[in-house]
Length: 305
Image (cartoon, rainbow, N blue to C red; front, side, top):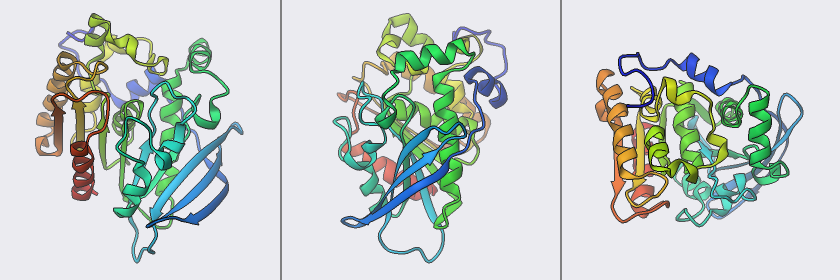
């Protein structure tokens, strides 16, 4: 059971947006600088949201020019109780990653964008607890705010002259993974998504107490009464989706992963797109990226973007 009546239809995108308090926002580029690195170009970006909030971003792209528009990836950064890192994960990496993903993806031919989420990076002056409470008191959610800003970043990335808007993927690890598949469920502009180490049935996590290992950003009132993670990830069908988990990851225990995957798989079966759903579970792996995961992500995007 998922906390809702089993004979209900799967949740709609519009209803999920209502639960998240998703809003249409925009990012306006205020400042940028570029520098040549080893095999790629790094752009340091500064955006402004509709309300004037400044948002730091980083973009990596191939050093050679494009003859035609090429593929792009929106990269969502992780949590890891390191609110100081934020978007700099793209160029500096973090302990749970093999290395910095931005340079690796740029050298593989992708334009890659990452922005600071609320309470992270240069926006860490407001704590996650405070931001979550404030959002809920106003009838909103911090996770919905994050997804709203990711959608705005997606729109900005799609407008880059070197980017083919029909070839944009999304990826991330941990919190970045939840942002990746939720955004893909909400926004059809995402053509393929690959996520690592944060896919599990929330109701099962609550039953076992593992939900308390996740951050407050994920607090969405009433979500389990109406849907589940497996169904939400299933909204991505028939578009390609790669799910990577470690069986020893305490944030994604096997029972919760298997329960979610059964629902996501059923959605892809109904869409007659089972071949577009790729599942990579790894034994003896915790909450971290592995070399096998990295290879799978690169092969996945090469095949679908």
